[in-house]
Image (cartoon, rainbow, N blue to C red; front, top):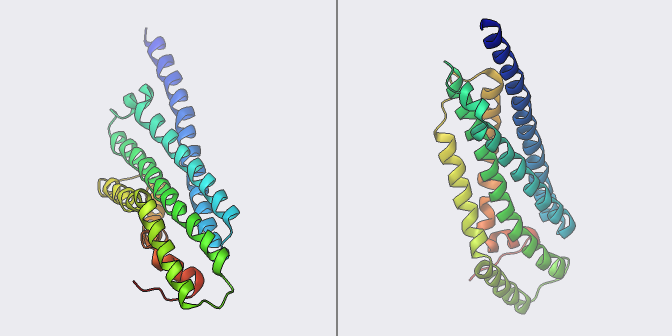
Length: 219
């Protein structure tokens, strides 16, 4: 009987290790895709290249899916539920689930920001390099207001998703986390700080357009 119990524990441990590696890989893949997307949005805004911005959107969707996969495995797999009952394991597992949720929230915020960037890029390609007349500036202002109205859902989503990420982050105390997980949260804190400037600014279409074209809009 004892041998059967030991064998069961070994098999379960092997399965948990296998699934833990799945979670780790999903988190790593999500982070890599999110970082690449952030770089792509910055480069696409600078150049006005819709292809770059569309590629960034694809990377953001991939990042979101990787993070969702990690969250589902860590949160729903029965083996992890058993593991979470062991002393010292529950906090580690909960922090992993929160980490995946934060990544998914940041990815969705990026998708909303990239939606705005794609629209503004059209205007950059239309007006960049021209000597803008007062009529051009008025037209730009009207077009910026149209984008802001038409894509208000995306503009609102940027703030909502970033707030969701911060709410998840506030639920985790890193003091007792294992070093790799604690380091991951250091990266999360940096990513949240970056998102506050890289994504939040897309809530103001006029500002993004001004930055893109090096002009001043009022109204």
